[in-house]
Length: 357
Image 1 (tube, rainbow, N blue to C red):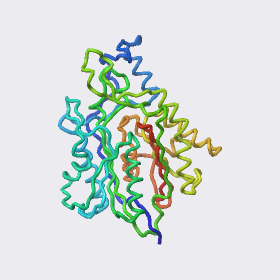
Image 2: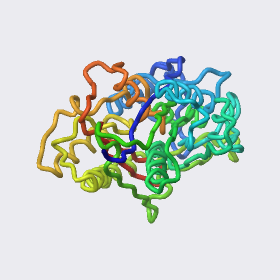
Image 3: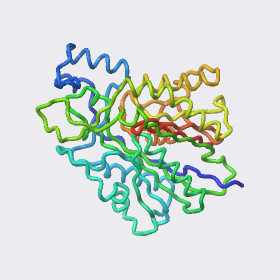
Image 4: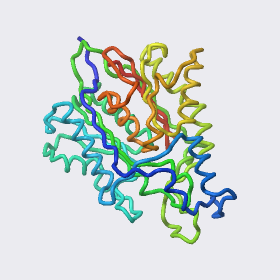
C-alpha cells in the first residue's frame, strides 16, 4: 500500500450560450493602432478558424458570473466523489479575472472567488481553507500542484481544485483575438489515500519566465481610441506566445515525465490546455520528437477547442471530466493508464503533472 494523491471525483459546466464564428461578421475589428484591417471580416474569420480550429465558443448567460459556474462544477465533483462537503480541507480556485457582471468591466476579486464558491456550497467548516490561484491558464494545474504539496506535507487530505473564468467579459470587442476566448468551469476532487490502485500524482514540473516574456499576455485598453482608455482588457502577443510555447512547453512536459520516471511511450492520454489547435499540435509533435517518436495526436490528445474555444483554467479539468465520464467519443481511460497534464499561459507560466490511474 502506498500513499497517493488520487482523483476521486470530477465535474464541469459547459455554458449554454453557443457563439458561432459568424456572430463576429459584423464586428468592427481594429489593429493595435486603431486602424481597420484591409481584409473583410469573412476572410479574417476563415483564416482564424484555419489556424485555431475554433468554430464556436461558449459564453455565460447574462445573469451569471464566474463564481456561479465554479460553484456548480465544484458541487458536481463533490457529489461524484461522494464526499460530505464539511470534510474538505482545501478549496482552491484557479481563475484570472474574478467576477465581472454582464455589461460592466469591473473585475471583482474581493472576497476571493474561492470564498464565494465555499459560501455557495454552504460549507460552514472554518477549517476548509479557500483561496485563489492567479497563474494564467495554468492556474488549475498550479492549484493541483499546491494541493499535492499540502498532502505531501501532511497538512491536508481532501481538496477540491476548481478552474473557472469568464473571458467573454474582459475581451476587447474591437480585437479579433476575442474570437479565441470563452467561458467555462471544471473541478476535480483530490484525496490523499492509502492505495494499491495506481500511484496518483507521480511527477510534476513548473516554470515561470519573466525576463522578456512577462507581458506576452496583459491587460490593456481597447484598440478603439474613442473608448474608455482606463479600461483593462485582455491582450496578447499571439506570435510571441506561439514561439514561446513550442520552444519551452515540450521540455517542461518531459521534465514532469522525468520526475515521474516515466517514458512518453507509456503515456495513454495527454490533457493539454486548449490554447488553439495549431499551438497544441505543434507542442505535441515536438514533445514526441524529444523521444524520437511520431504519434497520432488524435489518439492520445483529446481536443475540445473546436466547439468550446479557449476557456482558460477551465479547459483541462473540463476535458478530464468529459473523458472520465465517457462523454468524449473515441477517448477513455482505465486503471493503470498514465496521463500527462500540461498548460501554458500568462506570466508566462508553464506546468505539468503525471498521473497514474
